[in-house]
Image (cartoon, rainbow, N blue to C red; front, side, top):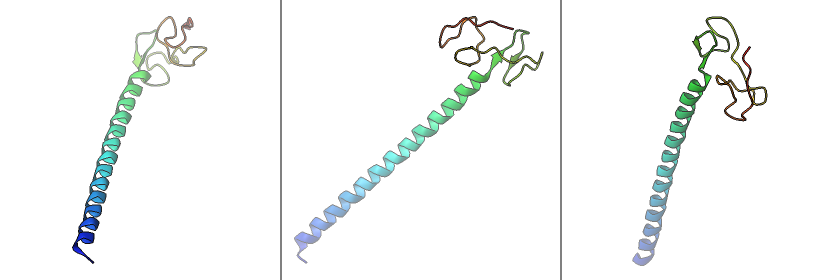
Length: 96
């Protein structure tokens, strides 16, 4: 095999290794981004689950720890609402 062919093959191998290295870095970066996004969603979800009952108790469960009532929900969106109007659709929300 002439030296020229060996050099060409070696260059191909080096390019393949460089491409594999870039791909590995890209995958690693994407995994990091996904992990950060999942952590952010978990933190946001925990904040969304916090609600304040009419009796004044702040809760993170399905029922108030102070009086036992369920949180007020929007009749259209079925999301927990602690305001007079649903933040997603604007429907007036009546408290029980």
